[in-house]
Image 1 (cartoon, rainbow, N blue to C red):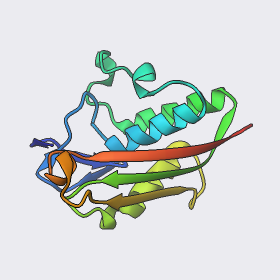
Image 2 (cartoon, rainbow, N blue to C red):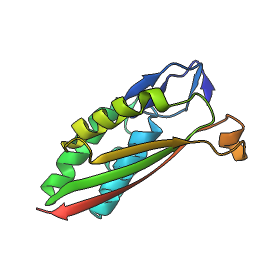
Image 3 (tube, rainbow, N blue to C red):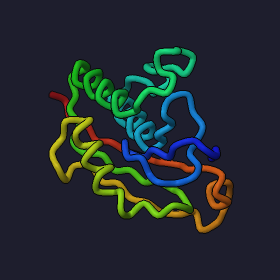
Image 4 (cartoon, rainbow, N blue to C red):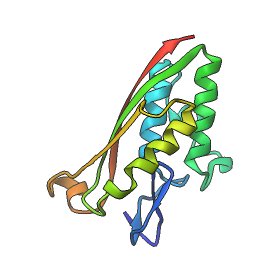
Amino acid sequence: MTSGRPLILGGVHIPFDRGPSGHSDADVLLHAIIDAVLGAAALGDIGTHFPDTDPEYRDVDSMLLLSETQRKVAAAGYAVVNVDATVVLERPRLAPFIEQMQTNVQDGLGVSKGLVSIKATTSESLGFVGEGRGVVAHAVCLLRAQ
């Protein structure tokens, strides 16, 4: 986590004094979801489609990347059935922001309410996340052929 960098998770700006470093807006939750969606369609990963070597993606809003991912997956003949994601972060508490994160992801993927689950947990003070030096997100996605 870097001082002065915004903390954006699931497209929501979380009030905090630090955020993750990254080429884009560093929204680790959306990046994990994008990887899960692309992976479920066997289309590679976020770095393949939105490389950090491309200046076009410098400080880009990851919600735009999520919407573009949805378009790529639909063009490959798939539709998102559901997404389940977990953010691992010691501080700040994310409970007040979860509902908006879910709405943002649902909108970005073009799925109905209730098809995106986002949870938050801590690492119980273990490792770099537990020391407050980082944030991790995990996601899985189920697709169906259209």
